[in-house]
Image 1 (tube, rainbow over the protein chains, first blue to last red):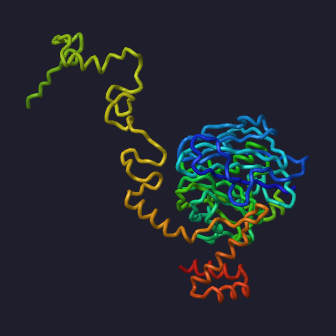
Image 2 (cartoon, rainbow over the protein chains, first blue to last red):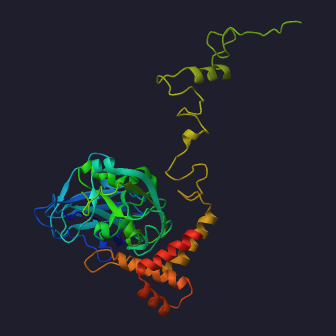
Image 3 (cartoon, each protein chain N blue to C red):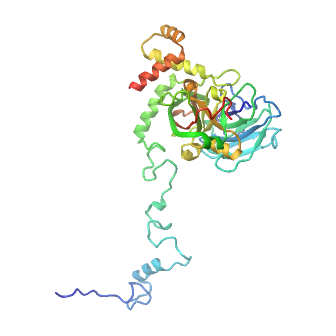
Length: 275
Length: 157
């Protein structure tokens, strides 16, 4: 099973009150990736970072409707999940391969407004992300450890400032699996993204919201627990130089201290493709 | 030794049953304010710092996440003074020209190899090599070796 979780983010410039289609971050797309149609893809959650209050609309003829779809108010400067929070029982919104999601927002008249979607692929051809479920974490987790990195964001609305997981402190044990439970940001932005070869070079992500640190710190555990899916990413420290963390935010940019909460896993507990 | 005599009142000042009760007097009004609660049971006694209707207490403050309500001029979440926040922002802006968007492959995957290669190259340049020499070293030693050297040096600092 080639599982993947992808954080797809985009932005609009000065959308004001006009529903404006988001520009996806460089070389990403709001079109659902091509998957085996017998395998499921799920819209896990979405959130937005608007300096001014606005709306976020996610719609498609293949979702409920192509008129308003999943439409939510995005309150100003508060990057929290707009539906399906991983801290409560969640519902599954199925997505369809190659479906071109229409993602629009409104917001300020003189700013970049960013939004992000989190998509779960149960089987994405060519990708072999390593993900475990909650029972595996409980069974095989050994030690908690944090990885702290500093990410200097760009101001274009795209992901930027990627640094390796060991760029600040190089303390991970050699050739050891670490489950990424979640993370925290000290500065408000749109999305923190983590990727690496263990995740199929597709980025998993969580909101860059410092006021819900106790929730983002457990983000992937929440998704795994609430959706009943293997959704906790696992990376191996042998690949640490190519496990990167970057941030997407608005035109204000910023320097982000990101703390990832990791769980050292027992040797051999997690297979090459997770569980 | 003479015992100290304390004059004991029949009822508190302003109490309707007190012998010196004067309706409408300041004492009567104050007693009424503290003891008559026409809307029902109070959360905390009158004038308690925790009572919702007490003035000049913490209960009147608006506690926004990351903001000290007694020092709202400080930067949210960092608590930095405006001067420090401005200096940090200036430092960020100075770094900005060197910060790049995350390299992506045309298929939409994060090009983590390019990130690692750039980190290794930046390290070699910081060691005093010119770019051509740095690239030669990088191709000869490989990214892993160069980054291992970087982390070894960083650990000694």
